Length: 294
Ligand SMILES: C[S@@+](CC[C@H](N)C(=O)[O-])C[C@H]1O[C@@H](n2cnc3c(N)ncnc32)[C@H](O)[C@@H]1O
Image (cartoon, rainbow, N blue to C red):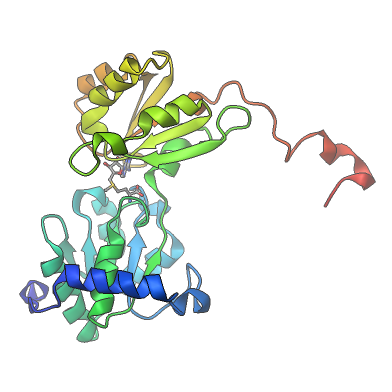
């Protein structure tokens, strides 16, 4: 494919990222006040593909993909049905295994040649997407960029589970988190603290391979072994699978199913959707006729 022959010359990505960060510390970007999410903008859009089902792509994302000449996508995390449905005419490049030194010149050169370039991330680019470093490196090369949001996998998971992540009197907060490992040190893993809070629904990304370690740590920290846990594999994909259990037994279920990646782990009482109270929004005050607030 011609795009793979892009010139490798670009500013060192780390230098570009550092200089963009410095700039951002000093000045707000004018575009913040000129554009809203969902607007058409100049440059390379970083589009959230959503969790998998092509129907869960936004309208803006669909339009951009349909007009694209080059789509750089996140490999197996993006459903190939979505690529088939909307990118049939475009050159496709899988970003997996490519570093910034390769990706940035590839996208820059295509953009400078007048081609419509889309960078397609799974779910929403703002969640564990590593989008900003690519955007900064491109901006440093003079290529404007912007984000088009997508449905993050936690929202697909809660829809599949037919529950809410926040639920009156059950869960007042949501944590999007990941377990310790290569990226996060032991001290930076806050899963146990979120569970201790009692009213947090904890959504663990990038943790399918570490379910047993995570649950063992929670048990060692004295958490109730019966605390509900759901593992949603490939939420919204044709092979979606939902495993329901508790801190005590979910690791056995995940190992039995053989999942090592591509699942979301949800911990907390909101998993069951039981025990909630009706909300103030639809509370009794709404039935007070003329005196009810607007
Ligand atoms: C690199 S992160 C990207 C997350 C993505 N930006 C999002 O908003 O969903 C990849 C992790 O997201 C989760 N994930 C992505 N798509 C998923 C899906 N369809 N079902 C369940 N989990 C998913 C998995 O935990 C996977 O390890």
